Length: 125
Image (cartoon, rainbow, N blue to C red; front, side, top):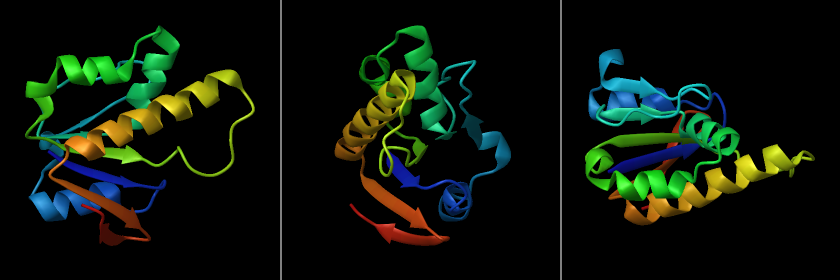
């Protein structure tokens, strides 16, 4: 599994498309209203999945641990919402915390971890 993180609108998805030769059909985009669907070559917007988890009382780490075989060969993309100003609302703090924990877990499991900033790739692992 390859893990790509970075801020909003920094070029994470473009990086994945170029580096791994992905098409739009290869990419599943999570939404806060749908959760996640494993099986795609690339899963984008993991932060939307964690928001869905917070709203539905689900632990995103458990979902990933239980479905490990389904995402081991994927490219996973997550927006960095776990740095910067701490949100005032309890829901948003929980979202930030869940996203940070999931990112730390995925980074530990990943073959490569890439941070994208201003379209520039920085290999962290």
